[in-house]
Length: 262
Ligand SMILES: Nc1ncnc2c1ncn2[C@@H]1O[C@H](COP(=O)(O)OP(=O)(O)O)[C@@H](O)[C@H]1O
Ligand SMILES: [Mg+2]
Image: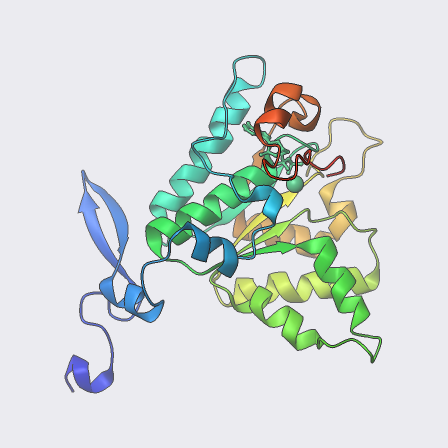
């Protein structure tokens, strides 16, 4: 049977990517059929809308992620380099990214920049998911008056090619939280979909009294994420209290300041 009979794209075999050798390294370029499937090539406005990037993070790109000199320069540079490399190598990489570090160090900024790179350079369907919001909305579906069903809320998070789970572990651990997060993480793992995670909790906190990521999300999800993601620690000053950078990211038309809480 010919390619046209089966409907499978010849150049990419239906994967949406053509693999090229460049300087001895394998690189994946989006195939022409991928662009057709997604309509016209996505631009920034379409990306922001389709990926549901919150307004506060609309301008987050790799280009405006500063690596400023000082004790944290290496950490910032390392995290930025690994995120850029993730976009370049996608979809040949077998693991997503998990960015961990204290509030305000730029984890969400880097996560959004990664989604932007994937969408604009590779035509990948992406979704931003604020984990706390999702859990709240899922709980609201228990109330019969809620217009959304559990499936309406979960389906995009389970099925979008790349999802950013922002602020994982922010919610107090409970059996329901564990079950819900486990369903999301396990489904994405089973379907080999890349997941990017940000969290304020470390897998090995410096201070014994600080809760670990494992304590916040449960050992099952934590060990699954270790298989699914490269764990990257981000050490930096809290940009929300560093006036210079906070001013840089103030929303121009409303004069808003970056949010105070992580
Ligand atoms: N290295 C950086 N370069 C430029 N802006 C930064 C940097 N780090 C943080 N910011 C900005 O500071 C604000 C808080 O960063 P955010 O990514 O929300 O932190 P986190 O997710 O780690 O709590 C955002 O407006 C972000 O764009
Ligand atoms: Mg954040």
